[in-house]
Length: 79
Image 1 (tube, rainbow, N blue to C red):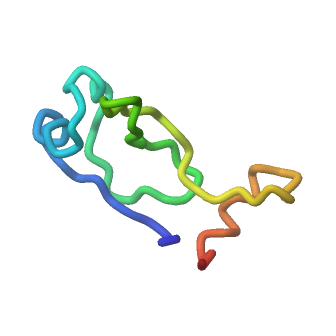
Image 2: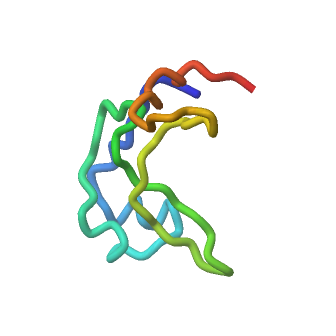
């Protein structure tokens, strides 16, 4: 898992076309240039034949972790 990433489309319409979702789904979108583990961000998932955008926290939480706040410690996890 990488440490940080960026999503810097200036126009929400162009991003919606690229992701295959409606512009209304990205109503609160704003460009972000330094998204870190445990930050809230958008994910895209398939729902039957459609795609939908949902807010989620980015990161890896192992099943054995007692505290979800420790997720930032797993940013260098490898398969």
